[in-house]
Image (cartoon, rainbow, N blue to C red; front, side, top):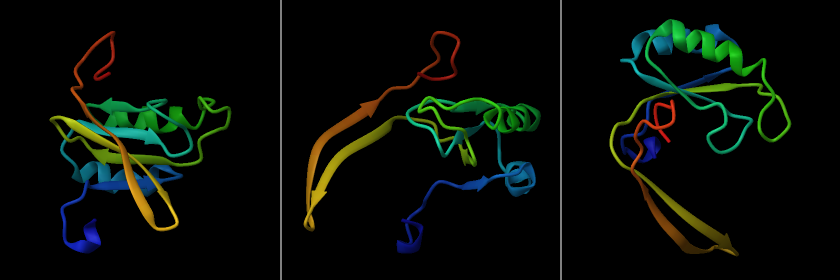
Length: 115
């Protein structure tokens, strides 16, 4: 997307805190941290300051992921407010089909920043 000249989410990934520290120090909080080795919303957290982000970054390497493996990298992203759209597609032999289109209205619930 970025290579095509479209705005894309600001993000940085790393295996060590030093890989993402400068990115996080330059971002406006809150930011989202998520493991790259897991699935769904496992380990995804909205962090409100640099200390919370650092603690969660290190914690993600200490816990088992929902898929039974362990995290080897953490993705840090700017937090985008608003509705989230998800498009499920399937492709075969160069032909692409849209299977579903979802619009999520995320809000705080059950002690989580967003559900």
